[in-house]
Image (cartoon, helix red, strand yellow):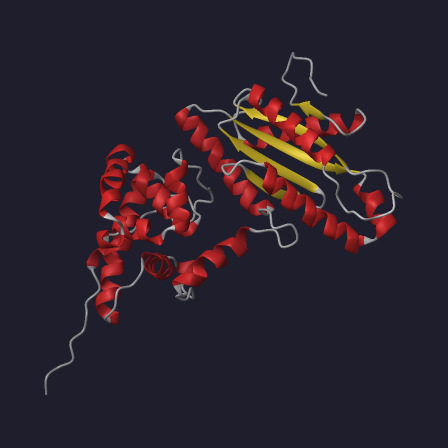
Length: 322
């Protein structure tokens, strides 16, 4: 009787694993087209996993050029697209190679081609003790699961946890590349009176409308999150202080022109917005200091009469607002 063949797991898939599996940061890549491909086109991820036949040949030169230009940073972005976690470049390259090896092992073991998303979930689940019970999911379900984990259920915006991840990584990215970004903390004026007048169900409808409005008025690269209750937070990459002032003025103008919660009798005071603005690096070099600066500016906007914005106050400088 012929003994049953077994497939030995690759040695590298079980040993010499990277040290950083769950560093809680997120990524804002430089190339908009590239991040769009990785978030929507699994074939690009598969290409870098060795399945080049899934990508049209005319894109090969573009993708190989990105591989050369980005170096190990490429694997940071590939793994972020798959896991929504940041891995330092050295660890990202090592982890990517291990995941690709694991993908080949799974494909051989199952007798069919296993996608890179399944491979990375299975590998990290097997190698990380706190994720031992992680199950394989169909590839078509993974994007919706990641979105569910990051999304506020009422407004459809990002949730507070995801905002914190993106903010911390944006600080790291901008330190590395010496780039600016700005932060808005925004509060709805008179929202309590609106709830008291029309009821909480109408208040929830209003929050959903406002969430949709914020998404429609912001750039694709911006991160818009529900910070909590009737508070919201915006991360504006590649936006300096002057550009942030122009952006918040446009937001105020658009908000005043939009009619929320209609048709309703005008019982409560109108809903307006107060905003606190801080900019990296002039208003703070860390996530905490940027949030504190924006929060204090928001407080001044509320005390100054609402329906306005204020800028983070630097030591020795008079705060500005409108």
